[in-house]
Image (tube, rainbow, N blue to C red; front, side):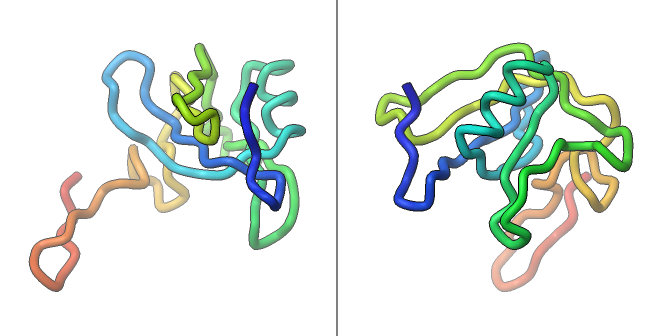
Length: 109
């Protein structure tokens, strides 16, 4: 079973189930994992708001979870998902839409 840190959290990476593209990184607690498994929709824990949230609950850009993988140390997850719209709150398909180029960020999408 997943091993949570001292705050009851672990890292969760959402990865497109068909293309393998990394879409986003967030945190999950035990409740978020349970809600995700119960509903089939990705739920996360916001550290800044100290609250549970469902991805896309206001935008409609939900993540349909197909599988959840646990790493060898049991302290990180990969959620294989099918997104219903952009995964990033900036409206980019992935939250990883920039790369470091020397000392600047370059948009890649």
